[in-house]
Length: 326
Ligand code: SAM
Image (cartoon, rainbow, N blue to C red; front, side, top):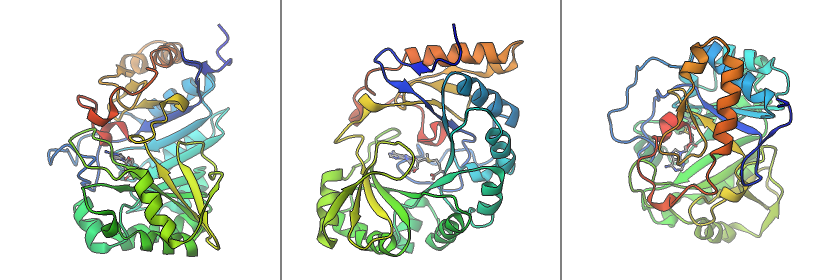
C-alpha cells in the first residue's frame, strides 16, 4: 500500500492533524483539567525526543500535515526547543504549533520560533489576577501576558488564547469586557471553550450565551478563522485587531469534522479525545522497525475513529486532559 496516499477514516474524514502530549507534568492545577490533587509534578516524561520524532515521522508519511505539541505543560520540558528543531526538519510538515499555559513563554518564545515553531495557543481563562489564580491554583495573569507579548514579538502568529469558562460562575462574572479590550488592542484570537466533563462534572457555559453577552460590546461579524483549521467559530468587533471565537464541543458538537489523532504523554495513541483507552506505541517505538509498526498503528487508529465522541456531556473513564493534552 502506498504510504503517501493520506489517512482517511471509515466515515470519510481526512485525518491530517496529530496532537502529541509531550509530558503529563503541569505547573498549574486547573480544576476542570486535573482529576484531584494527585497529579505527579515530577513524573518522568515517557516519550523521548527520538520517540516524538519517530511518531511524527511515521504520521507525516501517512499524510498528517499539522502537528501540535501539548501536555501537561510542554514548557516544563527543558528539551522542547530541541523537539521543535527536530520536528521542523521533517519532510511534509506544514504546521507546527504549541499549546501552553504561557507561564514560562516570555523567556522561550524567541528560541522556540528560531527552532521552527510556527504558532502558539495560550490558555488564559480569566484576565482577573484573582480569578485566574484561583482557577489555576496560583497562576499569574501578568506572566501569561508577558508570554503572549513575547509570542507576538517572536512572530509565533496567529496567537490564539484558549479561555475555558467553567465552574458555574454567572457569565456576568467572567469579565468578558477584559477579553474584548484585549482583542481590540492586540492581534490575538480569543476562543471561549465549553468545559468538557472529562475528569469530573464541571458546569459549562454554552457558547450561545457567551456570544449573546459579547454582542453587548458591538456587532459580531462572522469572519474566517486565522490559520489552524480547528473547530472554532470566529467573529470580529468593528475596529478590533484580533477576533473573538467560541469552541462548543457540548452544545454544538463538531465530531463530523474531526481531523485528528492524539498521542498521550504515556505513549498511547487515541483515535478520539473521549476514547477510554488507547493503543500503546511503546512496543513499536522499541521494536525492530518503528516506521513500519507505527504507521500500521496509526492506520488502525484512524480506522477505529468513532463517528462521534459518545455522550460527551457525561464522559467518564476517559484519560485525564493533562495526560491526553486537550
Ligand atoms: N498546559 C497547556 C495549556 O494550559 O494549554 C496544554 C495542556 S491543556 C490540557 C490544553 C488545553 O485543554 C487547554 O487550553 C485547556 O484549557 C484545555 N482543557 C483542559 N481541560 C479541559 C476541559 N475539561 N474542557 C475543555 N477544555 C479543557
